Length: 524
Image 1: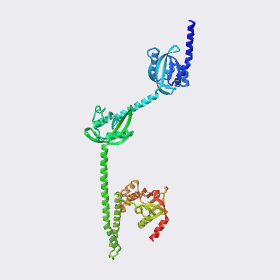
Image 2 (image 1 turned 45 degrees about the vertical axis):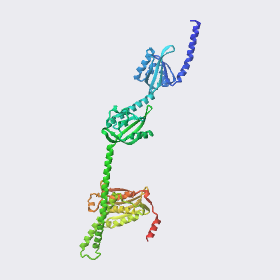
Image 3 (image 1 turned 180 degrees about the vertical axis):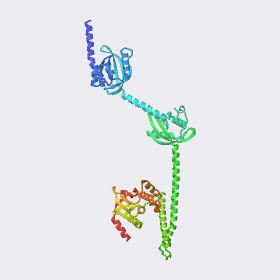
Image 4 (image 1 turned 60 degrees about the vertical axis):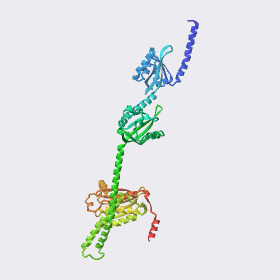
């Protein structure tokens, strides 16, 4: 070999030696993974490629079979075939995808290209790879979402329509739409809903779309449509704007609510009829109660005259006993009529409560006085324990009726020798509690429910020995609600009953003594 040839070869070798570090630096600067290998050995890897492996792996990665061990088994054959074709000159490589176990733990998708090259004078293959896992996941999520949408679109019983928001052309409808409106799919696609004549109001869709353009979605929009057989049906629509491939689409979902509307109308008519009948009943009872009280008061007055022999002696004591029986029966009947009148007012919504600040002990003391004689005759001890330092915002008449009804019931259903106690005390939340407790017959939870119903009477031997209308407790419940208070009942058969009327804190305040002193002076 001549001296000139030797000099030329030495120069080429020098260029190769100087270019390798520069090439390595260049390849390390890119984010794609670059591999150079032959059939058995990994000849070169850039920095991005080395980052796929742990330090332990890096010691063995020069062996190509070790590298192939981290490729997903189903993709390994494809990668080996690509390598062989390039080395044998059968192919220039091309693009491919495969799965690879990164750092021995995480499975990732890679997309790459392979090309045949000459590396250090030998045939080799260079592979350029980049991670496409995120894109794969996004595409998979999109496909899954699209498949889910298609499944819902096909099987949902609600009518669904997908159309252009600009010109109204229909892209797709679900089977429910075709079934409701009586069209074939070919008759619908590419046409507009207006051309199909499905809207009973021809101006509805334009108004609907214009409003939708100012928002993203609309829900529970009432619409009237014309279905197969030219039948008018009422629908409730939900709409959503969808951006697809740069075009705005309208997804319309409709639910037939015709039957629901008919049921609601029938229910409202039934309710109105029931309220009308109830109001008529209440007015009848109120009028009858008023008409009955007028002659009954006369009967009571004349019975008192005969009983007390005010005009003169009757001559036979049995007539006085009869007059007493007439007076007692008439008084009981008048009490029932008054209760019916009050209940009628409650049911008719005409019960009025005139609220002002009162001293509740005055009204409750009066109630104790009214039942004292009956309690004495039945050998029942009456007790009271009342906080006299409070004022209550209430209706004095209703407080009296609550106290009198509860005390009367307590005395009525307590055996001789028993006790009845009325308490008025503060509660833990600064409210007020009016409680009437007794040692009477008591009630079970089921019997309490019966007693709270109008005309409900607990079927016990003791209750049957006493007259009553079964209106006392229902009236107390109504009066309590009118005063914005709450009633609770604690009762056990054979032990007794305790009824609590709980007033909220805003209804209670400290008694202003000066005002009552001024009132007493005015009365004097």
